[in-house]
Amino acid sequence: MARTRPIPTPRPDTTSTPSPAALRRSPASLLQRAAAHYRPRSLAALRISTGLIFLCFGALKLIPSASPAEHIAVQAAAKLTFGLLPPHILLPALATAEICIGIALMTGILLRYALAAFHLHMTGVFASLFLLPDAMWHHGAPTLEGQYVLKNIVLITACLAVTADELTPR
Image 1 (cartoon, rainbow, N blue to C red):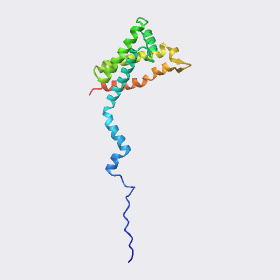
Image 2: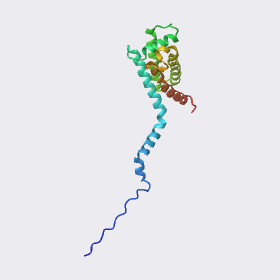
Image 3: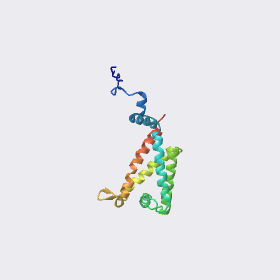
Image 4: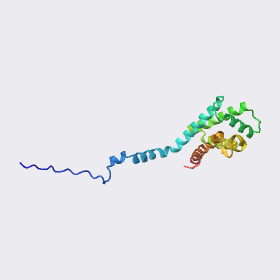
């Protein structure tokens, strides 16, 4: 009896295009689908996350010595108000403003007013770089306090995007 060799089954062609099911599971496809899902929600996510940061930083100012920016905030605000408001009034006022801005950003309620207040507040924050140069700079490099102020560039950029969206007619 002669032995017959089994007929080999063809191997799948690895150079052909992947099946639609495989494409749906590929990492690139998953990222594209996630991005497509996120895109229409991205400004809301930016607005809410910025609001949360503002709410938290404002709340820290209500707890004595909890905010690393407390001393600088009071010094800068005192200079901006020409010393007319005492620190025990300035700090709670700044905290309340930041909390209100944060809540408005998170909820979208009174958003235009909150954005105006935000940009006004950031003008004061960045003024501290010039009003308090000894606290903000050391040999031309930002101190820790200066870095704390400069990181707000990210918050400003986020709120500029939110402002542009809010003011764009639909």
